[in-house]
Amino acid sequence: MNICIKEITQILINDPPAVHEKFLKDEFYFASGDDSKIIGEPDVVINFFDENKERINAFKSPLGNDERGFYWFDFNKRKCRASFHNFSTSKFEVSVDKSFNPNFLYKIIEYIIGARSINKGGVFCHSSAVKYKDKVYLFPAWRHVGKTNILLEFLRRGAEIIADDGVILFQDGTFLPYSNRIHLLYYNLTTHPNLLDKIDESNLRLMKFLECSEGNDYKFQKNTISRLKELIRIRLPLELVTGVKYEADLIKADAIIHLTRLLDDNLSGFKVKSITSDKLSDMVSQASLFETSYFNDGYILDSVVNGSFDPTLQSSKEIVKKYLYNASKNIKILGDAFFSKCFKPAEAVNEIVKYANEKR
Image (cartoon, rainbow, N blue to C red; front, top):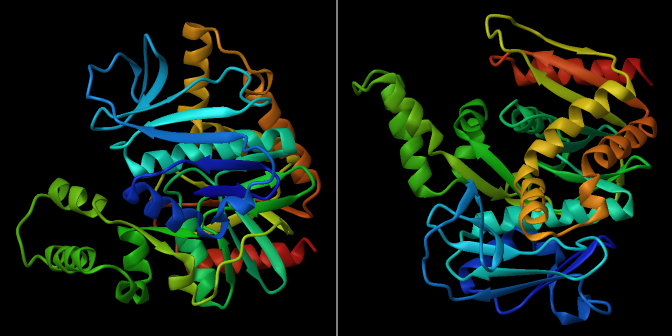
């Protein structure tokens, strides 16, 4: 199995277990194929192995180190091993326990794609993206701010969804989506109930149960209901949600609107204000570095304990901000949106479109 992300990286995955192969193909299906897609030598190789459960020598969860070197570990104490020495200039080899969590492996591959893109002038950006009325919008933000709800409201108005949760953003203002999934949580489904007919039966039953509990049909403590809501985590193919075949290609951004949710939920409204490239790159880089912290912290641990060194990863914090600054200089419309938790997606889209039209 191969994952070839344009000219960024060529990942060869040798004999993946069925559960890993299916999960990764679902996430990266446009980039997966046969050996003919690999041109020359792959720059990342992932192998699987059987390893007995051993005591975890944790540095901090989910990072560990033992006599064999650095590893990530999942909730079941299964390991994914790697050495970061000369990561950017030589073949990066990853060894994965066959029972390692597939979703965690997907995230590690996402980290690798983001880190490999640095040498190509790109950085991972935790952002959604849409095309609406001939404008391409990027919406970088922290987790659970409201990217997906805004995305779904754009879709309701006929927009094309490009990415839900992450892109590789290049210094010239172009970006590359790489995952074909949309991540839905409880509040996404309550805000957009038309999606309920697209989810699986078990999650649908749980949604109906929560609806009854909210209506006082059952007597539960609030924290019990909150925990049940957190169980609603669904990843659907974009094609299933949009009805349009997903295509991943380089796209030029026309606008980048940073989403900032205010801590005071008593405030109402949704406002978009101008922002400088310096301020924007600072905020977006913080979120991007946080999202890839397991990878960056893994490099730090491997370098301190095992002596691994890579000049690009060593300076990644400064490089990420620099590249994001350069990208923002090549995007026409920059904005920072402020809103509370109870914002209305329809109002948000109206304000975003109004702001973008005024800045043309």
